[in-house]
Amino acid sequence: MNTVPSLSALYDRVSRVIPKAEWMSFEDDIAAIQDLKRRRNAVILAHNYQTPEIFHGVADIVGDSLALARKAMEVEADVIVLAGVHFMAETAKLLNPKKTVLIPDMGAGCSLADSITPEDIALLRAAHPGLPVVTYVNTSAAVKAASDICCTSGNAVQVVESLGVPKVLMLPDEFLARNVARQTKVEIIAWHGHCEVHELFTPADIAELREAHPGVVVLAHPECPPEVVAAADFAGSTAVMSDYVANRKPARVVLLTECSMSDNVAVHHPDVDFVRPCNLCPHMKRITLGNIRQALEENRQEVTIDPAIAGAARRAVERMLAV
Ligand code: 13P
Ligand code: SF4
Image (cartoon, rainbow, N blue to C red; front, side, top):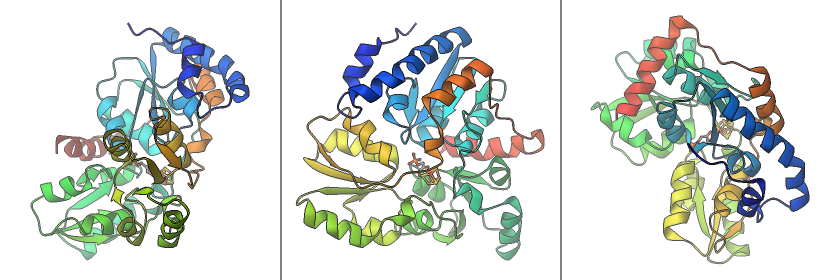
C-alpha cells in the first residue's frame, strides 16, 4: 500500500510554485481528499493542465490524454475521479465500464469536443466514401462511436500510418491535422475545430519571446497553428514536452500551452528557467480541490455513457491503444 506524504512533505515539493499563504488555504481540502480516497478506495487521475495543488497534492496518476487513457485501464480502485475535462472522464469510463467514474464539474468541456457531432461525421463519410475516420480523443463518446479509430496528439502520426491507406479524414482539430500532415505521406482531410487555448499563440509571440529571452527553447503543443509549430524548436503532446525538459534540460524554456503545465514541470526542474506566457483553459480550471472533495463526499458528478454507443466508442479507443 502506498504511503501518503505528509502535508509538509507535499509543500516542500511545490514550494517553488505555490506561495505558503496560498498553500495553507489548500491543506484542509488536501487532508480531507487523502482520507476520502482511502475510505472510498478511490484514485485521482489528473491531466497535466491541472493546477499544482491538484497535480502534486492529491493526484495518484498524472499525464497527457494518452497516458491517462492507458493508465485508466490498469486502475484497481472502485472509484476514479477524473481531474480534467469531460471527454477524459468519458474515456476513463469507456475503459472501466464497471467502475464509478466521477468528474468534479460536468461543465468542464472542450472547444474541440464541442466543434463536431456524429451527424457531421455522417455527412463527411457521405462526401468521402470509404475513407477511414480518425478522431482525436478530444471528442464526445458519441463522436468516437461514429469513428473508426481515435488518436491523441502523442500518437496521431502512428495511428494515421497504421491504417495503411493513402488518405484519411482526421477530426476535429484542423491544426493538429495540418501538423500531422507535415510528418506523413498520408493525405489528410481535416475539419475546422480549434482549441480555444492553443489557437491564440502566433509566430509573432515566438519572435518576441526570442528577442526578450535570448537562447530560450520554444516548445509548442501540436494544437497550435502550423505557423507556430514551424517557428518553435520542437512540438509534442504535454507528456512529450515534459519529457523534453527532463531529458534535454534546456537552460531556459517556454511551453506554448496551458498555464499550469509550466508550474507542474518546473516543480521537478529547479535548474531550468521557465518563461511563462501561457493561455488558461477555462474548462480545465473548473476543477478545484473543493469540487474534488465534494465529488468524493457526495459521489457526484457520475459519468455515464449511453449503452447504445458505448461499444463502438470503446472499440475506437481500444483500437488506438493497440497501435
Ligand atoms: P495532451 O494529450 O497533449 O495532454 O493534450 C490534451 C489537451 O487537451 C491539450 O489541449
Ligand atoms: Fe480542450 Fe484546448 Fe482546453 Fe485542451 S486546452 S481541454 S483542447 S479547450
